[in-house]
Length: 219
Image 1: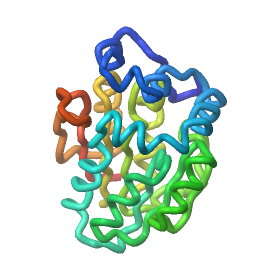
Image 2: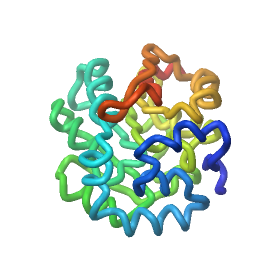
Image 3: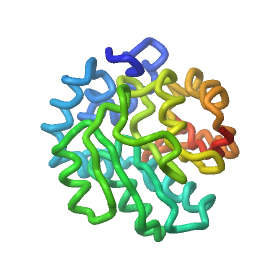
Image 4: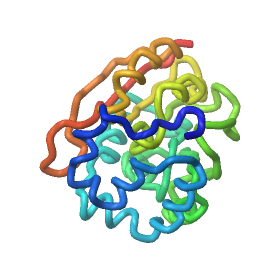
């Protein structure tokens, strides 16, 4: 796997046995390598929102957008949507009144769908495990849903992603159970002070399986 990308492990077995794992979402969590991930998301883009939000009943994106909105009063604040995909988080943030949202994702096909939402100021194709097209401290806040999970991002990318947010800014991330034990200490090491850590259900009628994290960036 590329640096920072988390391979499936025994620790993720319970998480992977959830019904969503039998959908394309499960294949995404089992993907190995950036090229394979890009190919999967290119093929999945047109059906992604239906499969994830309608069929699987994922609610984490809506929840994490609401958590960010509760802690950022300035609706002109600059927000980076990490792994924005088809733009679901951007749509929810727009509903909360945010006007300055940038997004980054691996799949150009998904970014075209995100662009069509009209929620974003700027969209960039990039691998979050490698160098990013944004300078440190470029944003007032960041949001992430669906990227800190098995087969995707883990602890080694926490610091560079935290550092995209200026001191005093906030991040609101969904972190799945399999990667939470390694991500949590890295947040503090990177200068992000968690203010909210809620173990939550992120799918309709499902048990808690991820953490909703709101952290203040201290430096």
